[in-house]
Amino acid sequence: MQLIDTHVHLNFDSFNGDLQTLRSRWQEAGVVHLVHSCVEPSEFPTIKSIADQFPEISFAVGLHPLDVDKWQPNTAQEIQSLATSSRPQVVAIGETGMDLYKADNYAAQRLAFEAQLAIATELNLPVIIHCRDAAAQVREILEQWRSSTGEFPRGVMHCWGGTPEETRWFMDNGFYISFSGTVTFKNAKAIQASAAMVRSDRLLIETDCPFLSPVPKRGEKRNEPANVLYVAAKLAELRGQTLEAIAAQTTKNACQLFGLVGVA
Image (tube, rainbow, N blue to C red):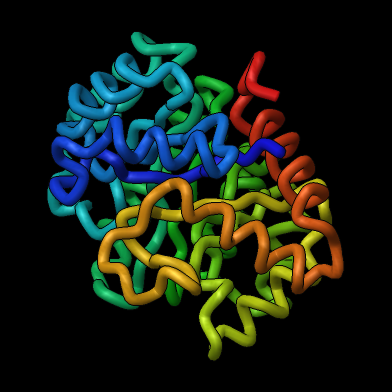
């Protein structure tokens, strides 16, 4: 059985000096590949160093919506240059998107989001979308994007927390839907309902580590890639499938979205 964790942040301080031990655990859990997300371009050298150390790690480059105060006139060019110079290790742009739960700077977030959509489109890369309390706004931006360009970008709604109705719109317009440890939480009824109805060919799994440790690791402050196994197991339960079937389908989907070759 093979699993792909499609969203990690192994460069965070909580993992300092511990990556070899973590790797042993994710290999034992069947994790054969990881996609490392990016909060801001300044992280790029550290993330690339981690990927150089562990060949099963691909990564993205982008600016998180909660960090748009760092957006400068040259940021778009920086993101595009970094992505271009490190292909094929770079497999996505992001994470970008909208977060109206922790911030209300809609205009600044939209500017950075649309700029990164343009980069992803130009480089033919998928976009990793962070969307928290902002499904309507992200939908509006994407609809206007389609009106002006004729098509939606490719991408994934990461750490998805939307309702089934919101899920269906993004899924029907070609986006992959990725579930994290939140799907295992007792009161996450809307997320669980969404997980049950996503089409198999649009389903992905992630940890978003070091955040959101899944049940039964909920009490641990630091999440890790090996725990994506528990996310897959919960999806299997919700969807009435075997763990092996979820693993095979989500691995296939991750390879298709991110253009991973020779992984599975």
